[in-house]
Image (cartoon, rainbow, N blue to C red; front, side, top):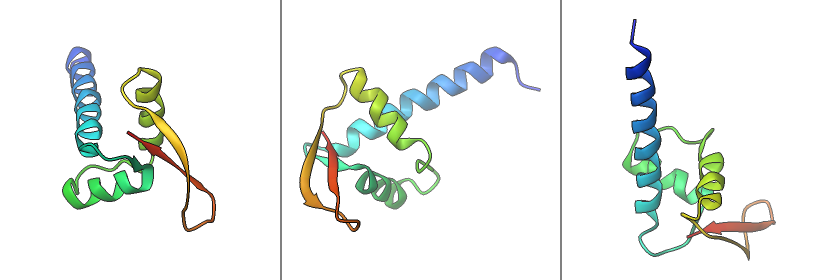
Length: 85
């Protein structure tokens, strides 16, 4: 059984790594959530973000790490798309 300290440490490392991966993915261009998921699927097959990405983006925006804006560019559902940068 793992030590609580080690479990907490591993969790913090994963969260920090995820922040870094999300920020490094933008490379100066705005992206919307589904685009980010596709980039991660192509480059980090082991990383599953479908259930956590939007929560992570919202938190990073609240922390001042990201900005977001709605654009009139339509997605497959015919609704505006929220871009992050």
